[in-house]
Length: 522
Image (cartoon, rainbow, N blue to C red):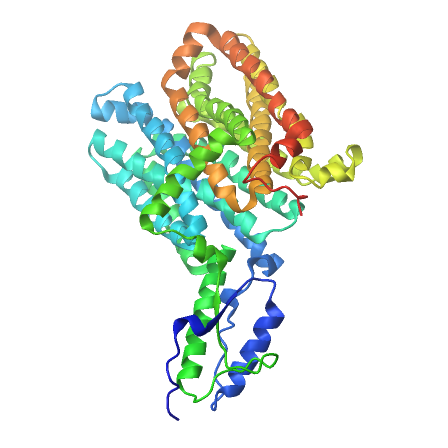
């Protein structure tokens, strides 16, 4: 057959492709398929499927993968402190100079998502996750082999940049695949447990490695683990961003339509009009996509804009930043406490981080029953809003200041070591609640902008947390365990009112927002 006469581009019948016009799409594909002499295959492969309609099993697998990935990031952040004395001795620098590696890691961890998170919203999650994973492995292995103090600091920056993807983009992935608030909440509770468990498990295991082998194996073991994790991600992680999948589907269909038309002397005919029509698909998100320069500007400015124009994001960022600061301070303070007060060695004092791990496991289990408890005390119409998930965690967040007072008063001569250990566990439960509240609320309230919203709070959280290890030991030395913990506990009490403010005024705040979700949570 001869080729059809070329038609002007403006004679194409462009239609918007969405997940809602399935019937229209099937009708058009049937028309095109009937025009092919040799049949042909409609490009309707599973890789173009709506992520909301993926199987529950694969969604849960992604949630577990998110747990593992987030665990690896906080393990990388916390395990470093166990080798502080060993690295100071090798490079002939002070402990504070070595702890700069923690600060640089958290600064990079906080700033990188300002670019990576919006980029993943525009261009897809998978490229960012895969490339970041490879860079993560390279950075960790470089930490294991570098012979220079400066080399270690540079490697820590790379590790912070690369690993930050898993702490922020995964929240966006959860919003990509779940429509109902309960499933999203359960997935984010797993995500939170990965962060908290890794923070405690990192120094616990790394102290054993440093004391019994060589401190470089601290990074070697992590590098091997991360390499295995990245291989699994590359092999099994599919693109989850709905707008990106729609764009790819539209391009595949348009290529197929071109191939069909090039082999025919006629075109698809619209029955209702009776006139020739060359149908093509486009996606609204593609029309909104900017060039590279504009994308860079959006990527860098959107999180900052959200941070300073959205009250919920700003105050949640401060709340999360305080909790994160306490957690990073404990990486230095806990070994110092048990070595000073109880005379423990590095390995035994770091074993106290098991309290954080146990508390995380308890809170992961408890969080699965949050919706049931909330339903017993709170009206259903209030639970069906993004603020609905805040009721149980707002109560549990009070455990953070309680745990700080407990730890400070328990870490005294004559008190059994289990007393401050239990206080550490109590504070960890409170930190878990803060972490879960922030991620779950921002994912539910900002949906398609969840990654950018969390990039904003991640920046504040990590900049605050990264500074604390540099002066936390000095603060505890000067104020004493009781005085320092009382100061921090007092601040914790004040910030505990943040979620309650959103519970009562959140709907009004969202109603005035250009970015927040204004309907119910489903």
